[in-house]
Image (tube, rainbow, N blue to C red; front, side, top):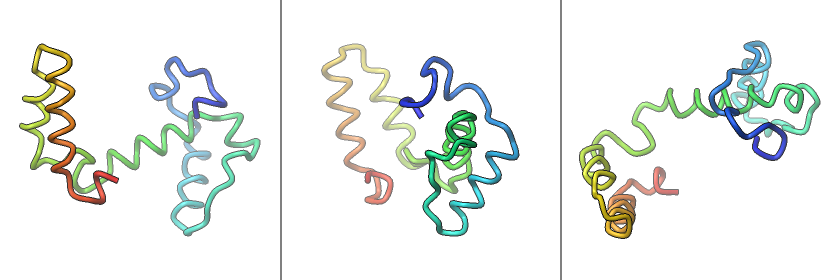
Length: 100
């Protein structure tokens, strides 16, 4: 996405709905979509839109409901070094698929 698009705002703007659906169908059919196709390169926002939709539709967020309070506490730490240490500690508590 960042290689083929204007990075500023790329994850904020939406792609063309028909392109997003086409890309979703390719992923859903267990094919590995060719993201170098002109349709995707010309509408790079459809790739970022589908990525955002994937994370939004997960039954349990990537950073899990169970660890939400720990993440919130970690990011609230004022000292940057201590904050990063705490965030890394909480990341280690993620379920293996989420951590990967």
